[in-house]
Length: 258
Image (cartoon, rainbow, N blue to C red; front, side, top):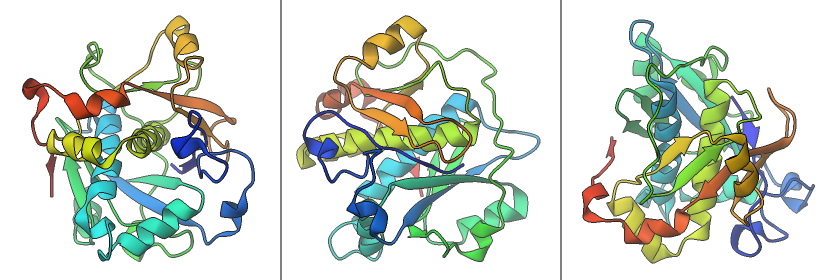
């Protein structure tokens, strides 16, 4: 499911030229790119919804931090072009042979507890590899068999709006937006510490009273442009990103990716 996000607190990623703004800017005139993500959904063993959302958020962070996305790396220009325009992400689903074909393309697979999400370097909106273009966007309806516990208070938390009903694919894209906002707020040193810890984070849905507090506290906020599935509005509040550089040893565990 595709989406665009817009907003952040003052300074940093929220300046006049930020791609996280809802208003039309010169970035709309730039060539438009999209970050493809594919979630593996086998009929017999679909992943848990919350684990899929957290894995998608980590996949975005893994792509942004990968050496191939930095400097003169092979993906660096595509990542720069993507971030110079509207920040778009599309989540598609695959299983069986479809998944194996997707895994054969250059990218990175992030493994959660039950979820597998593969992220690929950005591509032009009309330049998808055929192996990915044929995958379905709809049908990413996932559930949590158990109610998620409290979020890890020592790591960043991506709070999803309780007022917006989204498919799992749309919510995965929004979680990815929130993770990217957190990344943009951090220094290089803090980013490295977060990566070394395995990008610990939680994705949760707060009660309405907490959501109202989060969205009026000056935190980075994701505002969807409303082009697909939902009306324009706030979807994610990013809390605790400043904790990423001081993670305790008990959460310093590498996330699995390949």
